[in-house]
Length: 259
Figure 1 (cartoon, rainbow, N blue to C red):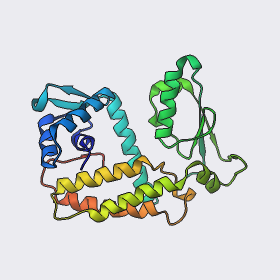
Figure 2 (cartoon, helix red, strand yellow):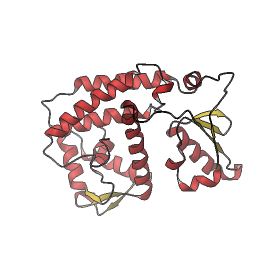
Figure 3 (cartoon, rainbow, N blue to C red):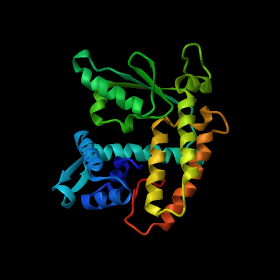
Figure 4 (cartoon, one colour):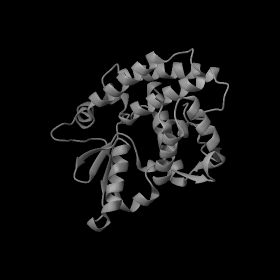
């Protein structure tokens, strides 16, 4: 079954709102009852990602500033994945180091910043110190700036390792990412062109989202060649474009899903 959150986010525009009637009706067409949708809405509201205006099917929802920031971050990650696949985002050889300097008295800020860095794919290399081959500072909240110490290095040595690919292998285990894309490949094989285009789009989007959660998007130069997720994403894009070309209903993920 397609996750209720996937259905909700599929219709959320970056600007403006969307009628809850559209979301509930689409969910019902896909076999999802109202109650799971209401629960997903409450969770998104509770996390600060969306706000609701009105009640029930006559209401509407829209992204908050925090929700827009998260969507922007997701879009950057998605575009980076496809740019890397196309060879348009080569690694410049620079490591980005980020140290959290929040004091114990501001533990909540420190913990939130740690979660954000890990969610963006940074790897801990020492207490409070994180590394990434990407500059992540632009994807963090502006509130994080006073609590970050950053540096850029062309050479890095971690536990005796100095080779860039060796370092990447030790910090970002490939196994979870490969497993995630193997699952995505299975979902792509299950894609049925006889199904309604909207059903196909939502299933494909949900499957890609789950794969990206376990993908730190390490540059291809730091991974084995060939890198299986690259081919899986290429196949995904073929199926997505085919489904999108057949769609005759309200547009989903307009303006940010397709790179």
